[in-house]
Length: 126
Image (cartoon, rainbow, N blue to C red; front, side, top):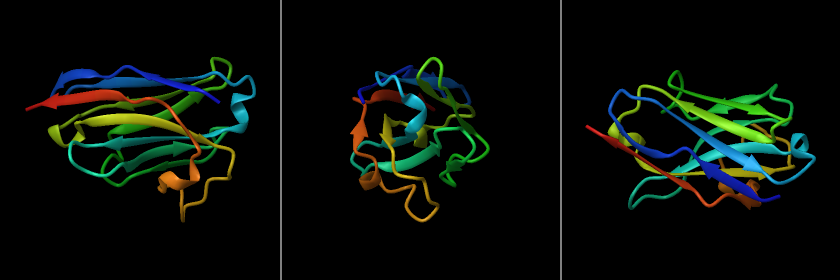
C-alpha cells in the first residue's frame, strides 16, 4: 500500500491543523493505521493509531485530549485532527499502515508498521 500524507504547515500555538493520509490500496479497511512524528533531532515517536474498522483507537499520553484520529474507508483516508497545538508538537508527521492486529503492548512501536508515507511538516510557533 502506498501512503500520501498532507495537511502540514505553520501554525501559531493554540491553533489547529488536520492531517490527511490517503492510501492507494482498494482494500484499505484491512489496514490498521498509525500516525508517528519525528521532532527535530529526536527519534520517531508514536502519536495515534486506529484499527481498520475504527473500533479501536490509541493515543500517546502527550496528545490525549488534543488530537483525534479518524478514518474514512470509502475515501481510503485516515485523518489526524490536531487542536491546541504547542511548539513541542513541531515535527515531521508520518502515517503508517499494518495488517497486524493492534495491541496495546506494541501499537506504539514503529517496527510493526511495514508501510510508511513520506511525511508532512508541522511547525508550531510560540
